[in-house]
Amino acid sequence: MSGSSPKISSKAPELMHVPGLVRISAVEALEAAFGDTLRLLFSPFNTRRWMKLSVVCLFLGGGTTSAAFHWSLGTLPAEVGFREAVSDLVDFIAGNPFLILSIILLGLGLSLILFYLRSIFRFVLVDAVVQGEISPRKASRDLRRPARSYFTWLLGILMVVGTVLGAGALLALPHLRAAAGSSGTGSLIFVALLASVLLVEIAVGLCIALLITLTDDLVVPVMYAEQEKFAAAWRTVWRHFRAEPKAFGFYILLRFFMAVVVGAAVLFFLFPALVAIFSGAIISGALVVLTLRLVGVAWVWNPLTLFLSSLGLLVLLSVLLLVMSVVGMPGQVFLQNMGIRFIASRVPSLGVTLGRARQP
Image 1 (cartoon, rainbow, N blue to C red):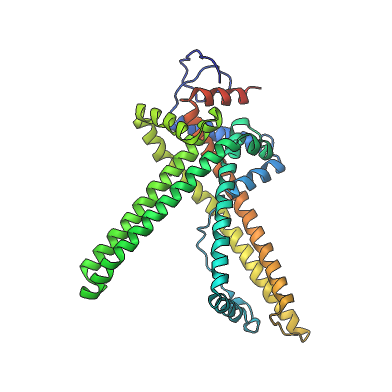
Image 2 (cartoon, helix red, strand yellow; image 1 turned 45 degrees about the vertical axis):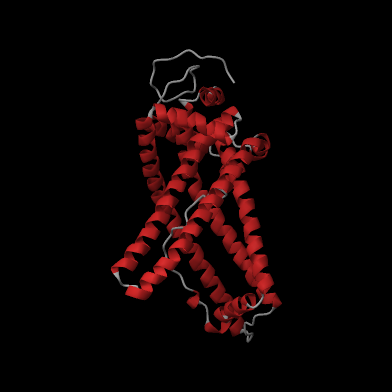
């Protein structure tokens, strides 16, 4: 992209007003990312920018689904018959193999669409962090080629890992059955075999999670700057990794520590919001049913009530997704910014792109 740049001796993490690059540590990348994130989100505060970033981060897994609170449909009056309606629906689906197949195919198709959108919006987020402004339509159009390369890799790695784990579980199943039949499920042999299978599955899952995280943090920004395909960008990152194993190792540790901190902060704000939303939904449903009873109308399941219930559920899900994405978005922007800052100080094309975007 750019010609050779003069080296600079300063170790300041900011690359905004300098033509050259200097390798920075993970801590310096964190400090720079924190300032960049505050500027992007609050200087000045722009509601449209927040909403656009929230939608982008929603498809990247914004928010958190680990809010471990408990709520119950038992709050609703028993006359509603919700559980009976769900049970009848499950029995109807179970008795129609064609419907089951259709649901499976629909789920697979929806998964492919979501994976593709995730790939596109990952590059949109990188573009927003680098440029300091979000333009989803322009970014998705300009970055479609590297996004497709990333999507192909993501889909391939998940399919391969899923196949390997599934095959491993099927191969281990006869041995588990034999151990359970001969010694019982409480025997040491059965417990050891089961623990071994679970540990292997967990280890593989953690390795894949680490691989995808490093790809999102470090490889995607290189693909963005150099318009390279996935394999070429990974070779670039791997070359720097071999040259600085300690720096990259510390980055990985700090990155996952910050992910835990960000997750805890998101959960702190998200928990009361979700409790309030679910409580409000349950109370609203109970009030509707009780009001109908007061006027002498019994709640029965028919096409109209099914439509109204589905509409209410859709509104509830929309509110939940909106709240989760808005609350989780700043953390996602910060973590992506940290990865970009770290790798930009080592890849000239990305460093120059970042420096140009930051110039007044």
